Image 1 (cartoon, rainbow, N blue to C red):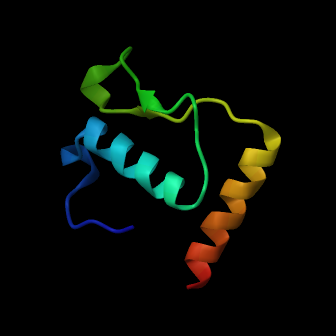
Image 2 (cartoon, rainbow, N blue to C red):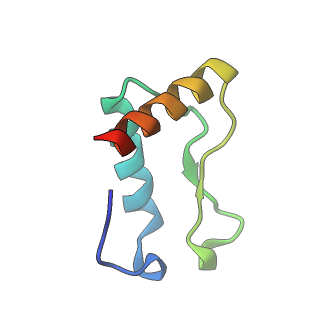
Image 3 (tube, one colour):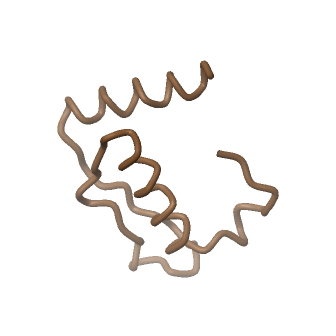
Length: 68
C-alpha cells in the first residue's frame, strides 16, 4: 500500500486498523497489534509477537503482494 501522505502525518490508530484489515484479508491475525502508548509523540504502531508459523505466512503474503 502506498500513500501520498508523509509518514509523520499518519494517524497511528488509522494505520493500525488499516493493517489489521489487510492482515485479516490475508487470513492473518496479529494478536498483539496495537498502538504504542509509551511514546505517543512518535505515532508508533506496535506489531507485537507472533508464532513462527504466522511469521512465515505473513512473509509469504508480503511476497505475493510484491509479485503482483
